[in-house]
Length: 111
Image (tube, rainbow, N blue to C red; front, side, top):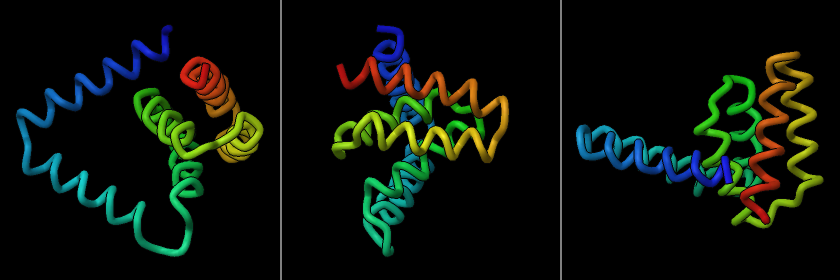
């Protein structure tokens, strides 16, 4: 339940931030919507990119949000594992450690 708790804490923190700077968070949300709905790549592919970047920049809250989005989009463990392999290749040792966290998160949130 560690990752479920992290996901809830992330959402709580974002709601708190939204209460303090609603114009900024609304604008950021609009940007997210625009990039996920437009362009050539499909939504799931874009979420794979976001997960890989979350690992490379070592953002656990980002890992939880993008893993949840991938689960909802129908991602499989094997597909996520391919993304983790690329993130490790691009980010070296630190990305390997965060890839382990991402797989743990996927396993828990998809159970």
